[in-house]
Each structure stands twice: as structure tokens, then as C-alpha cells.
Amino acid sequence: MSDDRRPELVFSAPPAGARAARARQLGVDRLWGRDPARAWRLVRMLGAPVLAWLGSGSVAYGVERIPATGGVLIAANHFTALDPALVGGLASRTTHFLAKGQLFRRSLLTEAILWLGAIPVGELADSRAALRHATDLLRAGRVVGIFVEGARQRSDEMGDPMPGAALLAVRAGVPVVPCGLDSFGWARKRRRPCVAVFGEPVPLDGLPPGREGVELATARIATAIEAVRRSAIRANEAGRPARLPDGARRRSWRHAWLDGVTRGTLA
Image (tube, rainbow, N blue to C red; front, top):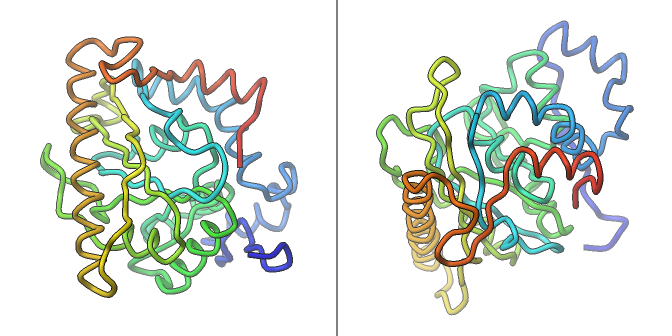
């Protein structure tokens, strides 16, 4: 994509409620130039202590497996409200999450997640526009995050994957990094350590065209996510060691905070 066709980094959405409209009128997001990368840096720098309290003891492994440059799709399973922070807050790059449309009707929460580059999809949202926007971001070299089941799961097992991740990856021609989360049972009033494990990019080459290719890609992505989710469970049971048996390094909220203070964040 040429420079003059780069997408807007913040999805265009109307303000949700009077407080959100007021925040937009005040231009709060001008403080970080409407750039989600800078907003994520502030979250890592100012919000890491709060997130460290909410997810006390939570860590991520394999962040180094996320390519440092170029478009990347991070595909994860989904159990709790903490999951976006585990993936985006502990990752090394700014992540534009596809988020359910209902979240974009909650006033100041809407503005906050838009500031972080979220993209509304599903109910109460224009899903086609969202997928186009996500594809444009990927082609422009950004990172997009998607929870493949489309909603939080009510059991401790991964749910059936939807084809959105495969469609985006094939359409944009970007690698898919699987992320497995061991976060089931976490709640604000029932906090427990959670673990995220990022795996090696999923190979999507050699797929047939059309629906069959998307179905095969979806299955490959789901299998990879389940494998690293199992790895996350084992890491938690082992007391969250400094390294996993495969060499993946541990990353904590302290590391995220230091990145926000010193190095900032990669786009």
C-alpha cells in the first residue's frame, strides 16, 4: 500500500453518549496525536501497575515470536475481560483489536478503546467496514488482534473457531501468530495469575482457493492456538518459570512498564 493510501489508525465511529462526545470535543486524543501506538505506550507506562494488580502474577511467553516489522495477525482464544490486556498489554507491538460492537455503546469506554485502535465488529457494527479497515491496517504493516471464537467461552475449553482470522490473513497476505490464553476463571473479584503464550507463525501456504482454503486455514490456526493454550496451562501449573521448555522467554507487567518508560512501543 502506498503512503497516500495508508488507512486512518483510529476507526471512524460516532461518540457513544454525552460524556464520550464531550471527551471528543475536548480533543483528549490530541495528547498522543491520535496514534494508538502512543496510546498503548501510555497504557503500558501508566496502566501497568493497575493491570499488574488486576492480573497479579500474570505473564506472557514468546513475545519475541511476533515479527518486529510488517503486518501481523495475532489470533487468540478468549475467556475473560482481561484477555485483551494480556495480549496487547504484554505484547511488544501496538495491537488493533477487533472488538464486539456492544462495547462501542458504553460512552467513555468506547472512546478509550478507539484511542487504542480497536475496530468494532459484529452486532451494532458495520462488520464489512471493520474487515476492510483491518485488512488495510495489516497491509500497511500494523498488527491486528482477533479472538477466533468471536465471544468469551463459558467453559474451560476453546470454542469453535470462526473463519474471520483466516479470511483476514489470506486477504492481507500476512503471517498469523497464534496466542493461547490460560485465563479461564479470572474475574475482577476473583483474580488469579493468567498466562499467554505466543507461538510461531502458522504456515498458510499451499492452500486451495475459495471456501475450502479458508476452512483448512481456520483449522490450522485453531490447532496452533490450542497447542499454545495447553502450553500456557502447563506453564501456570509449573509456577510460571523464566523460560518454557521450547525456549520462549517470560514477559511480565514490569517489562511492559519498562518498555513504556524507556523504549516506547513498536508500531
